Length: 209
Image: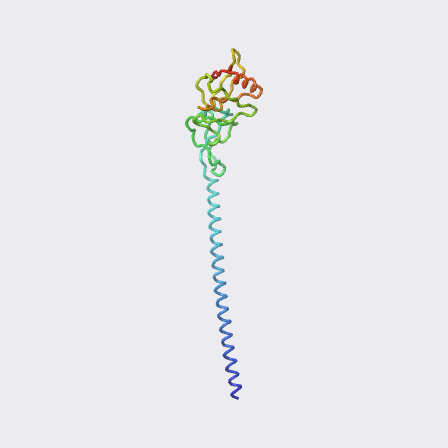
């Protein structure tokens, strides 16, 4: 009888211990689950808030308009920007180039030729006598550094004269450098003649209107 009682007490003790272990394990698992749910909820809330903010920002870019400069006619490389060849157009921020011009810069000239209704950007213009782009189908020719020529700046048009003959009319001054002199652009068919006259020292420049 005593052995049975001892056995039952021992079994009850072991059962109680096992039950307590199971309860603690379930409690720990439940806490882990709660923490996991909380973390997931926070992450979902963060991504939802970020998506909403991004959507609102994008919507604002499409609804907000800013007036920017566009060409009102075809412009040639080296041509000065004026109120006569440009106009303002209000466009959504979402489709505007990041460097779109909102006003005409001082002494701004075209770096390259543009067609009408083209949005103007800072990368398309030059200032302070910087080099401009050679027109398509033309060639760049360096003139002698000791060339006697009128005062010109990049974007001016000149006639190249040798003796009493104009060998290239309407050449484009693409760069004026204190060290390299004047570089002009001429049509490809005139490049060899102009380069030869320049090399022989027979070329002169006449400022064209």
